[in-house]
Structure formats: structure tokens, C-alpha cells
Length: 343
Image 1: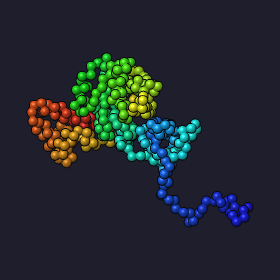
Image 2 (image 1 turned 135 degrees about the vertical axis):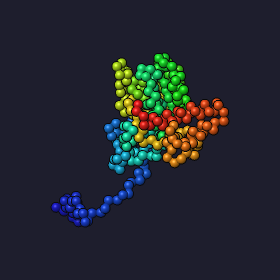
Image 3 (image 1 turned 120 degrees about the horizontal axis):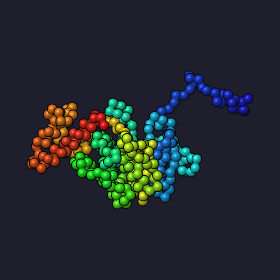
Image 4 (image 1 turned 90 degrees about the vertical axis):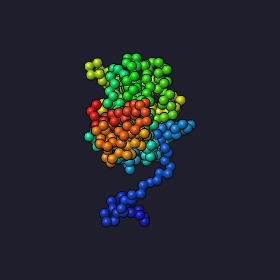
């Protein structure tokens, strides 16, 4: 029965007819009270965020995505706007309503023909490629691809060579230092000096660690961040490959709040279907300037007709300059070739 001056229960909750219903508005709430959080972990639709980073009120918060972000992927490293219960208390759940503009995006595809890009991490400053000098043997094709992915994302590159007590590092240094890649060599992670030499290059930055399973990446993370407790594995004596121990990316803070490291699962393949030559070329200021004279559609490879990079090489002022340019151009073309070569 209807109350005085009101409507009955069925009328109050009845579904309006199509003719009488109001169209849905496309205007979304502004969420003016939202606070900014840093995504440190993602697990099955739940996001671990750090709010108030570096402030006395700093706290970890668990959140889910708002409905308007249903088809938008939130990844580790994202800076997001959060509303709801942001106290960080037990059994509380906040809501991610916006993703702030990303300064960098590290992507990969499943292979070189896959059109679907997967974002590995956002807003990172540098990619740390962890490679063992032995057990397992280094695979330069994968290192090349990782360098290309980093340059495409606008990130710096650090090549961390582990197990230097088992094999020399000279050959890999010679391959990557001409590309502007900084190289740090680690003999054993049981030595504090070795760990500190890596940590020095990570301070004040967000660094992504990438590498094959078994190269010592998780061991390195545990040494860099005491208490991280990342699972470690061993190399298979038959296949020469390691077993996956990290199952998802996670951001870990360096001691003394001196930076962040993002540990990623061990990779078996790194597709570069999304990478454009111009993005890689932009990482080489001298080559990029010379390539401005190339004909339209130039691939910049060895067999490219009328490539201005060959003229740049021939125009070297002396023998020493030519030798330097030769190494740099060969390294650059090796990177371009790695985009489509199998590894």
C-alpha cells in the first residue's frame, strides 16, 4: 500500500519504460578528492598501491579498478588517482579511477608477428638487463632485443653481467659499450662491494630488471633489497635454462628510500612487433642526424640503397674517427636486424 502522498513499493522500484527513461550521461565524476598512489604490485585484479610516498602518512593500500577503467590495464609503476577508503586498514578496498600520464612504457609482444602489445612496466627510468657470463651462456640476440625495447620506450640501459668468476666479460663489453650501454660486472653476489656497485647505478631511479631464468636476477634482487625474499632457482644441466621463479612484476624499494627496482618474471622470448625503426634511431643522436638525409622508407640496413649512414661513415675526418663510426654503425644495424631475427 502506498504511503500518504507517496508511491507504493513496486512503483518506487519499477523499471521505467524505454520511452520514459532518461538517456545515460557520458559525463564522469571528477573525483576531486582523489589521492595519488604508486602501483607496486598487481595480483588477479587487485592492486597494491603506495600512498603518500616519502611522507609521514605513507601507507600501503589495496585497490580495485573503477568500472570506467574496466578495459584499461593498470601496471606496476603506474601513478594512479585513488578514491574510497584509502586508510590502508585491514579489509579495506580503495578504487583506482584514473591513470596519470606515463613518462615511459616498456612493451613487449609474444613474438614478432603478434599485434597485441603487452605493457611490462610504466614510468621506469632504466632497463637493467641481467645476463650471466656462463651457466647459462649469454644470448646476445636476446640482449639486443632488450636494448631495442628499452630505446623504443625512451629508457636508459644498464647491462649487468653476473658470474664473472666463471667467464670473462671483455667480449660483451665490446659489443654493447659502443651503443652507449653502461656495463657493470659482478663476480659474486656474496661480496658487498659487488652488490654496492650495482646499487650505485640504481639510486634515485626506477629500474626494471629483465633477464632469462637462471641468470641470477632474483638473487641480485634479494641482495639489493634485504628482506625481498624473491624465490630463486637453478639452471637445468640438460637444457642450460633456468626455471621461472618470479611469476609477476613487483616494485621493491631500495634501502634508505634511494630508489625502486622492479623485478619481472624470467623471459624466454621478447617480441618486438610494436617497435618502429625511428624510435630506435632516436637513441643515437649522431646517427639520427645523419639519417635525416636518407630517402623516404630507408631501412638503414647494410643492403639499403642510398642510405645516408654509409655516406656518414665515408665522411669520417680520419682513420680513428672512421673506426669509431664503423663500430657504432655496425652495432646499430645489428640492433635493427635483431627486431626480426629469431633468438
